[in-house]
Image (cartoon, rainbow, N blue to C red):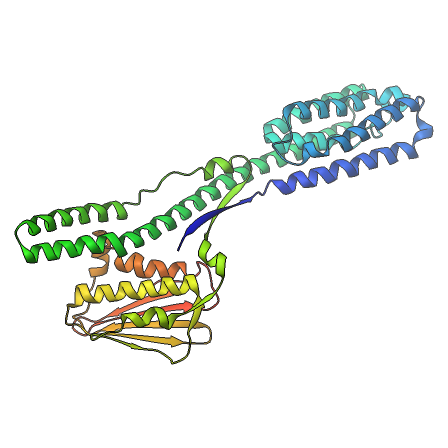
Amino acid sequence: MVKRVRVVRMSVEQPLWRALTAYRVLTMLYAVLLAAFARHDYERPWIAIAFLSLMAVWTLATLPKVSGAAACTRRFLGADLGIALIGIVVTPLADFQAQHVDGPTLPSIWTAGSVLAFAIKGGWRWAGFASSLVAVANLIERGEPSRDTLHNVMLVWVASIAIGYVVEVARASERTLARALEIEAATRERERLARDIHDGVLQVLAMVQRRGAAIGGEAAELGRMAGEQEVALRTLVSSGLVPPTRLSEDASEGAVVRTVETDEDEQDDGGETDLRALLAPHAGSRTSFAEPGAPVLLPSAAATELAAAVGAALDNVRVHAGEGAQAWILLEDWPDEVVVTVRDDGPGIPEGRLAQAEGEGRLGVALSIRGRLRDLGGTAELISVPGQGTEVELKVPKVSRGKAGSVR
């Protein structure tokens, strides 16, 4: 079964750019209509027409520039703010009464779009810089400060800085979330590799150690070396060392990167497997298998993982309950879930032994059984009474709950 990682990009910042794009178009239309209704008040209407035509063409031509942080360059921000400032300053040239009457400037509220672009791109400091320039231009246009002018300037200044601060907080949250997703993905990958190692290499090394000690001679030395390598490998598996990734770096570019594990084999066929066929080979002289007599269908990947968890449980029976222990496998097919119970008549597990084994790097129950069921969205419950054997109950939902399953 082959696993691969698919990268999904998300961003809480991108909706702000889409909103800014719509805002610029709407406020451009508003400024044009406002000037058209007040055209008889302009002493030099050709100045207003020339500027508003330039503003309209600029707004429509530069829509791709406000589609995202990467496209919105500093050069564009400077030119955009420059056009807004020019429109404010030339307003008295088109309307002589503009300096004496608290009316709108030629760009009107379109100017706020330029300031907001600074806020979304660079945060509250950039927003403060741009809104300060707008304030100076408004004071120059009015000639002397008035209450309405100061009110409008303060409104733009506070609003832009607040939005810039919110953007910075959102970016910090994106980086934190990306780091959390990175750790989660790395942990899942480490657990998957640890399960594979436990089910294969560690089992072989442990067998070589036991057989070598039983044979003696040079085989005993080989068994001793195998035992040393088993201990070293268990320490490495349980140490939590994972390779670094570039997820957090991608998040700094305005996108949260989410890793999604997919099963290529499952994507290829999308079929189902009868779980009975995977569990039946475990039946033998010391292992009894009881099944419902009808196909127990699960997605192929889920069936394979569940069968591997059953195999790990039986390995524990052989290793810890002794060669003479009897084991029973019970397969139950319920409407909403599949339940597999593995029971033995061994000596049971002393209280606290599982936690001790996990601390020693023996992760058969923690990873090969519980880890697999958790990844399937199911549960793994282990019940053991010293002297009365051990029972492992594995439950897998027929409709996947993702990672929502609990492990007790």
